[in-house]
Image 1 (cartoon, rainbow, N blue to C red):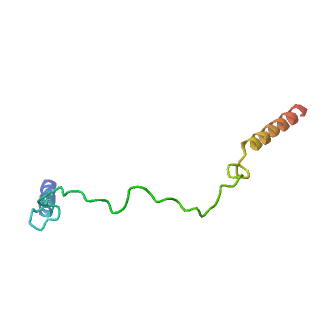
Image 2: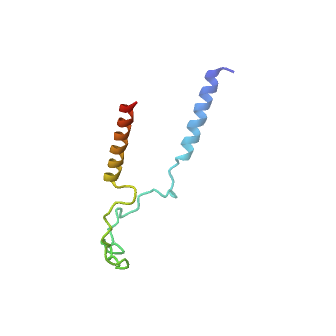
Image 3: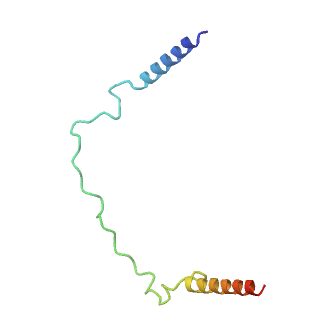
Amino acid sequence: MNTRILAATAIAAATLALGACDQVGGARSTAVKPGYPAPLSEPPASLSAPAASRDYGPIPTWANHPAPGTDARIALAADAKARAAAAATRDHA
């Protein structure tokens, strides 16, 4: 068969299939209803959040201290010591 005939048949079949999917009818759920847009009703709740409960007590004094292993001063000091040790072994070699 000729490839042009196959291509034309495929395009015609796709056009018919897609055209059949978009039939306008009375049962269409996306139809605009009379009175659209409807007036807005009041929100079911207020727009602000309720006050937080006090279940946790006061903030501890150590709350802003760095976690163990994350203090940058200690890490930089250890890095400086490692560089100094590497430089000392390189100078003696």
